[in-house]
Length: 226
Length: 226
Image (cartoon, rainbow over all chains, first blue to last red; front, side, top):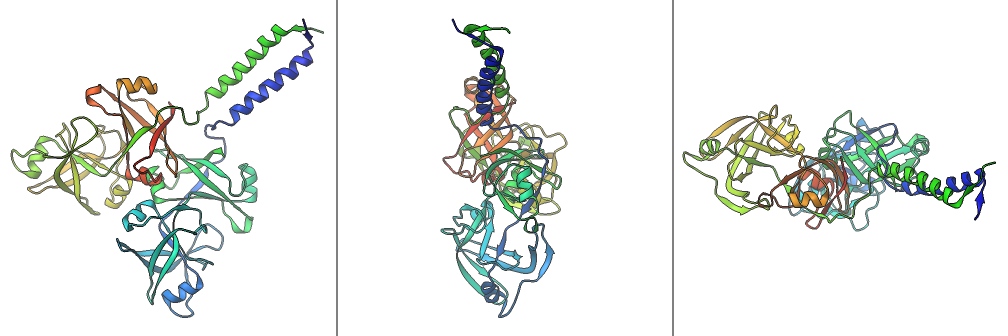
C-alpha cells in the first residue's frame, strides 16, 4: 500500500480541481459582473464613396454633417437617398459620413424582406457577394453592386476596454441585452481600435432592438467569449 | 506528518471534484441534447369575442376558417380588420378563430412603435392594463379597451412533451433559436395542455424571428430552465 504526504495530497487535489474548474470555465457563464455597455440602435443607412456622392448629389459635392455620432469622426449627414429594388423601395434613407472607400447599404432583415432582396449578415466592410441596390439621390442614381448587408451586431471598444473586458479584436461573444424582454445575441464581434478612433458602444439593428424591447437605459453584458 | 492511504485520497478527491462539479452545474448549460422544437412565427393578428364579431361583421356573423393552424381547433379566418390609433393604422390584419372570451390584439414591438401605442409584453389572455385599440370591420367598429399586447414568446406542448423536456406549465425557459444568426430568448414560457389541445411548437413574433434570421428549417433548443 502506498502512502502520501499532505503536500502530495494538496498537489493531487489542486491538479484535479483545476482540471474540473477548467471544464466548468468552458461552459457559458451567467451574466458577468462586468460593467454594462451602452447600446446604440442603428436604423437603415448608407455609406458612400466620394465618387458615388458626386454621382448622387453633383460634381464636387461632399456630405455635410447634421449630427455627430458616438464613434469619433462619424456623422449623420443632411443628405438622404432612396433605395430601390424590383420589389419595393425605401425613401428618406440616412447617409452617414465621412465618405468611405466603398459604398455600403446597411438594412435590417425586416427591410431586406420588404425590399425582396437576399442580403447576408456581415460585418461592415465585408461586402464580397453581398446584395445589389439601386440608390437614388437628388442629382443622379447609381446601381451599386455588392453593397447591401444586414449588419452583424458588434461592440466598438478601445484597446483599454478590450483589456478590461478580456476580449481581442474580431473575437466572438455572446452578449445579453438586459431589458424587460431579455435576449442574448450569440454572434457579436469585438471591434477594437485606438482610443482616438473608438467609443465603447454596442451597435445592433432595429430587429434586434425590438426583439428585446431595448430602450434608452438598456445595457449590454458580455456573458461568453468564444 | 500525517499520511493517507490511496482510498483516503480517492475519497478526498471525489469530495472536492463533486463540489466543484456541483458549482459548474448551477451555471447555465450550453444547448442540451434535446430534440429541436418547431418554430412558428406569428404576424400581427386579432382574436375576437362573438359580440365583437357581430359588431364588426354583422348580426349573427361567425368567423369562417381559411386555413387550420398547428394548435388543435385554431384557424386563420377569411375575415380581416383595420387597426387604428391617433398616430397611425394597419390594414388587412388577420383575425384568428374560433371566437374567444375576450378580444385581443397581438402586435410586434415594431408595430406598436409604428402605431404610437404603449403595449406591454404579455402572455395571451393577460390583458389587464394592456393597450387600447380602435378595430374596424366591414360592418362596424369597436373601441376595444385593454386588448393590445406584444405576445411573450412561448412553447405550446402536451403533458408528454413537458415530461420529456423537463418543464412545467408556466415555467420560464431560455431558448436558443439555432439559426445562422443565433439568438437566445431568455423569458420564454411553457404552455402545457392535454394532447388533444396542444401541438409542440414555439411561437415568436416577427421582431424575434428577424433578429435571428429564422427560416423554415430553424429549430429551437431549451438551454435553461428557471
